[in-house]
Amino acid sequence: MAALYACTKCHQRFPFEALSQGQQLCKECRIAHPVVKCTYCRTEYQQESKTNTICKKCAQNVQLYGTPKPCQYCNIIAAFIGNKCQRCTNSEKKYGPPYSCEQCKQQCAFDRKDDRKKVDGKLLCWLCTLSYKRVLQKTKEQRKHLSSSSRAGHQEKEQYSRLGGGGHYTSQKTLSTSSIQNEIPKKKSKFESITTNGDSFSPDLALDSPGTDHFVIIAQLKEEVATLKKMLHQKDQMILEKEKKITELKADFQYQESQMRAKMNQMEKTHKEVTEQLQVTLVCHTELLSESIFLHEQIKNGIIFES
Image 1: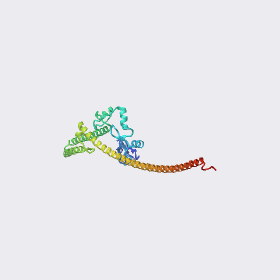
Image 2: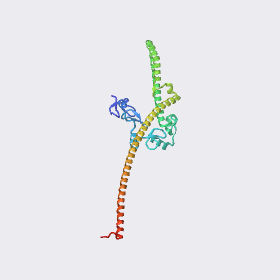
Image 3: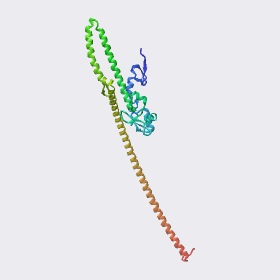
Image 4: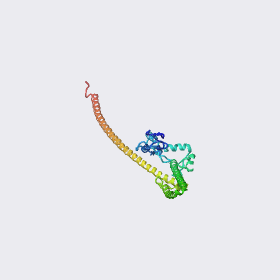
């Protein structure tokens, strides 16, 4: 009995071939929790739910620092602190200032000499490096598939040739040869119809390095378009949030202004009342003082005698 291995998500046991490489997930868990790209930092992560569009690290940073800004180098919306994302900040410390990427032409390619060996010596930014490696891997797998199919066809020819040695196998040999001839065009058309990201793939293109460059560029352009669309959507959301914030601030300012105006009017009214009371009091005191002076003069002149 073949050994069974546990899925890392549901912990049910399956044959090793039924689990994915790396994550070791069964088919149902791969469908329920696909590997997607983070909306902000663009790293791949295993999606827990359809509403979860950012990785755990970015989710923590959003809680700590708020919505990120586009990085001044790579333009990825992952600059939580300052104007640079953490990836570009670390790369700049380790490799020095960035250069222009040979694919996207942005000033965000750091000279990682070890990585350049893996992408045919090209100086690429992080996103373009991932795209290039992905296309090279697909091309390598397609070459391997093409080579194994060619060997299988060659072995079939040799087998049918050996079977055709006896006289009573002549009819079988003729039938087998015709079936091989009919099968070869089918295999060729099958390989020519292999597609990657919606682009048709041909064996000649896979075996030719200049063609591979064009294939890489097409794949990268498609990914850039998707990235730009997401960035545009994010910027629209940011604009809407800012407009909402501005509207709230305006409403708050108008409320504060009306409150201040009402307070000033009340203070002005209170001041006026106090002033009027003081004026009345002053008039009363003035009259009393005048009467006192008059009486004093009368007494002084002997007109009125003190009792």
